[in-house]
Figure 1 (cartoon, one colour):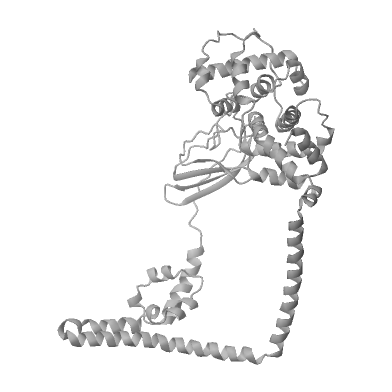
Figure 2 (cartoon, chains in turn blue, green):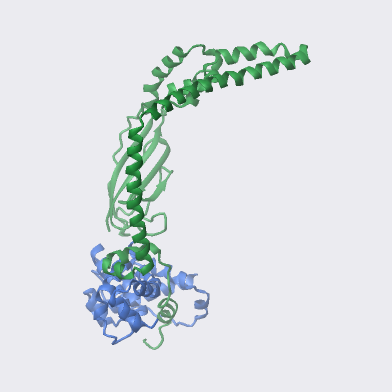
Length: 174
Length: 279
């Protein structure tokens, strides 16, 4: 079923369509949750909350963008809400210069499975992980990240660069 | 610097569409949260039919039960006859036991007649055992009398051949009962257990340990609020950094831990404390 038709049926309250929508996007969104939340149980809780939100707000979806992008935003926001509830984070980071290396050993990447990368991300400290997820994978701008997390743009940038250096370091050591 | 971000490309490529299987339970809780409207519209005609027929079936069976109950009330005689019958069967069973025992003896006797010299001597012993031993001769009675007590325990305590009468057995058991339920003697070792630690890597209180004391057979279990085991150790000198059994860092919150061990004199030592993890 096309997303358009799927959304229409879901709004009408067709439970089969709702299940289909869930089945279509939940596995991908669960990965998103796992990247932000680290823990499986917490990720499931956030995923559940997200989809309840998605279904209740589905009538607000204006078909202006891709459905998946809209869903993903809701999921990421739910993750951030939960993280905010869990603890204060990202409170004291200054912008600073980060060393750069030439990125030439891309062959390493071929041996890396998505599962390995998931684990790498999940082991990152909270601040790095969230900014990295938002910037590198979800494609938020530093400006958006700063607004979402209540940090400055330069903090977001430096967190990202640090996260990247951290990951590069881990990958090269493998 | 923005021209080529290899790490970004790598992670975006591999992870932006990465899927992780979702347990079906998540869907069931989502579907129950999004409300009954979904459930009602989702029912097909067949489902409605099934519900309808099962309802009528339930009503019908209810009526049938009521009728059959009243039938029973009319005929109380049946029950009494049943009781008589059951008592009959009991006596029959008893006689059966006798019957079962007797043929055995006769079998032995027949055999012993065949080879007199070899099998005759053991015969009296066999008789003696079955007559004197309360456990073997009337197993039903002896066990039902001592309900709640492990029959093995009783047998272990009392070698069957030495016990001759039932009263003795009962005495032994009534003496044994309170002892077996008492907990083992507690060690009087005093130990002050930590109840907070901060595994945030700042070099201060980063590891959870317990004070050094003379204990053996040490084991420690840490549970989270849901009662899930997140860490165990059998090493008294353990040094926990907050990493749970599944490799994740324990989140800030309240936990509880239990210690069981023995002191040097063999007395058991058990203690528990709450543990608050903060970052």
